[in-house]
Every structure is written in structure tokens, then in C-alpha cells.
Length: 580
Image (cartoon, rainbow, N blue to C red; front, top):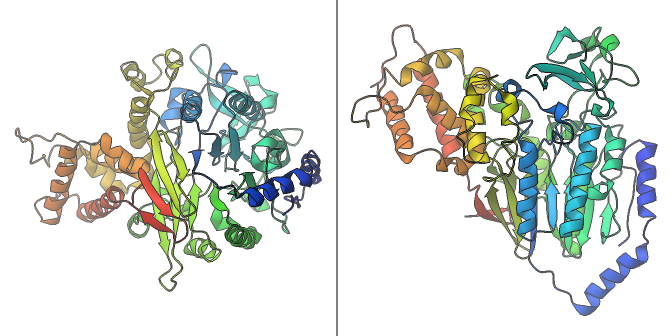
């Protein structure tokens, strides 16, 4: 077995980086290690790997000018500020448990900004030196933001005076993709806020899996016959363990007609590229634009079985539906844009990787704590399990620990991030900019803070984004006109917004959310849905069609409530069987 460095992208820079890294050590050491393992019959013991996903890290401590306003967080699917401290807390927790290997499954930073990527390197190097840890990354749709270097900025950075400020990586005027009519002029220029492309990002993080490391037993990456960059790799960090990182990012080219007259406002010196789409579709685009990855994965799986390696397959993007069976219900009733249906992998994705031999896949991207399973009814070769790792930058903050007990059984444990030193350090800067800020100080820990933030997010974003208007209009009436029958006073102890918020808690946190939803309230929801089905709830004359929407809400709620095990469970990687 030899170290392999084939062309991972069409960038000559990346190829030269790979060749230089490989030259740092020879094949002899690797072959000696393998020979000794065979000669002395070294047995691979149980191995533990921490998996941290979607930290969306921003260096708000080293660069306090990058702190974002509370309003921007209250409408975002991830935190921008407090997650800095949560990421460190997750690393500290893993280090204190004696875990030496850490998988970072994408969106490590919020947009791959140069100064933030450099801060991440410094932080991880510190953990390497102090605890002997090693880190293995994969790309996400936020890093790299685009395949080439691009300018970046926002209009909602929190100034010292408490007012929003416009900061950009160049002095030119610019506009945000969702508001092209609003031309912005930077108040402050921070050149290192530019977003790194593939070659620059890989060079910055070369020791974290993307290039060979002197401590690796084996490393390779696939031949890439396409024009799309790819940073997939296979590494054997210690004898007998293979980590397979799949780069599911594909930045397709936009049609020139859709760009219009944007180019003059995109900055100088290789400004924000106007001709690339984001890579958020994940594996759906891989099947169309990087199909060579499926053949490479098939080869890796086959060789791992032949050579007796323990294989861990991970990517940023999910391989399976992450909505616990609710996708078809939502699509038919509420449309393609609700519940992130545009990000759900197509059935052929699961089938392709199942046929390639993958039986366990670990992913992030969706910020959900969820487990999915794919079964090919016509095959007797087992199932495919997809494990979604929650984010530490949202609700409910957590990471997972994978314990490889033996060659067949992989154990997953979900670790909540409750205590985060310093998470409230930025609260004074928010001032009175939001009604919610007055409720921040009584919170006891980071998890409670995320729960409060999430409540605001559901009301500000998810209700408006996902639910049909007739259901939105009806929600305020649920707590009054339709009282909780279990309440002695006859008054509702919950509201329609409570019901929807708890639905989203279950969707994002899975079974972890049950610690924050009282059993009595769950029973009250059951009573409400039952009365709706039994014609005991009669919408007023102007609410025609509401009953059918409540019926859909009932179905979706129970899909989220009755998901597969997601907290502590085992997977048989030989068969893809999920063990409770």
C-alpha cells in the first residue's frame, strides 16, 4: 500500500501543495508500520472520535468589530456571536474526555473568511499541542463560500455605538444577493475578511486531513476528471482506521442572463464572483457534476473490507431525507420550499451510495439531530444509516461521540453543550436593541440561551417561511377559542405558537427536545389533534380549509415526535442495522 496523491482539483497550486506535503516523508515508514502490525498481530482496540458540525465560527474575540447585531441573529438559522465560545466548549469537553480524533463535518466557519480561517488554525494547533488531538475536516457550503477568492461583507455588524455598521473586504460599493437594489458603501474596510477559495483554504488547513500528514499511515484522494474542484480524501490516521471525507460541494455556474448588471458592483481584484451558485444542494449536485466520487467511494469500501479496516464515512451533506418521513406530506400540502425540501437528497443519491457499499454515513448541514435509514427492498445486503450531527451554533447545541467498539458495532452518543464559559460576554453590547435582550440576563446557561433565541427564530422566520397563510392566521386563536381541556380553569395553558415552536424543537433537536417539552403539554397537543379529527373543533365561517391544515400539522408533528433513535444508539456497519 502506498501513499497516493492524484489531482484533486484542476488547480496547479493544489497539486503542488499535495506533492510538497507528500515529499515530507517517505513510503518506508508507512510500510514498516504496516509490516510490524502484521508481524506482531497488533489488535486494533476500541476507538473514540468526536464529531462537531456547523460551528459557523467567527473570530469575534480577536476581531470584535465582527460582532453582529441581535436582530441579525434572531432571523438567522445559526448564531453569529456566542457560538465562538460554544465551539471552544465542545473542543474542551472532547479533550477532557481524552478523545484524540475529531471530525469537523463542514461549515467550520461562517463563510471561510481569511482572518477567521487563520484563527481556527491557531485554535486547533493549540489543542494539538496541549492534548495531542488531531482534526479532520470536510468542506461545507460556507467554507469555501465560492471555489475562488471572493470579497465579502454585511451591513449588520454591531458598532461600538450600538448601531449597525457596513463592513466589507474592499472599498468598493456592493450589494447583498437577497437585496440587489440596495447599494451599500462600507463604513469600514477589512481586507482579510475576503473569503478563501479551494486552493487557499486547503493550504491554510492542510494539516487537518486535506493533505498528507507526517503522522498518517496512509492518505489518498480521488482522480478528478471534471472541471469542478474536489477536496475529498481518505486517511488512515492510526493503523486499522480509515476516515473517508467526501467533498459534497459543487458550485455550479450561473447563467449569464441571471447576473444582469451586477458585475460593476462586485469589487476589484477578483471581487465576489458573479457566476457561481452556492453549494447547498450537496449530493444532488454530486450525482450530476461529480459522479466519479461514487466509483471512488465504492473502491474505498471494497478495499476497506479486503484489508480489514474500520471505515468511517462523513461529509457535510446528508445522504438521506432528514425530515423523519414528513417530506412527502409537507411537499404535497405546503410546497417545495417548506422544511428545507430543496435540500432533501433525491432517492437516487441514497441508492447510488448504498450500491457503492456504504452502510453508515455521518453528516451535518441541516443543524438537526436526526437519524435516517434507507432500505433497498429488493436487496438482502442490509441498509444505509445516515446520522445527522446537530450544530453547536443553534438549537439544541450538541456534538456526537462515535465509539468504534469492534469491527461491526459503532456506538453514537450525543453530548449536549449546556455550560459554555463566556457565552454571555457580549450581552452588554446588545443594549436595548431588541425586546428579547431584556430576557437574556436571567438565563443560566448556553443551552437556555439557545432555546430562547430559537423561540424568537421560529416566530420571526420559520412560521412565515414554512406555514401556509391560513394556518398562520389561525394560530393565535388556538390558545383562546380552543382551550386546553386538561386545564382545571378551562383556559389554555399553551398557545398555537407554542405548538408550532415545539414542532420545530422536535424537528431540530429530535429526542433531545423532550427535556424542554412538558409531558402534560404533549398530552394536551394530542387531545387537541384528536378533537380536531373528531369534529369537536369548528373553525369559524371565515376559516374554510383550516381543518385540513391542522390535519397536516398533526401528521408532521407526529413524524418529528416519533423519529428513529438519535441520542444514544448503535449501528452495525456490516449490515446497516440500527440497534436501539
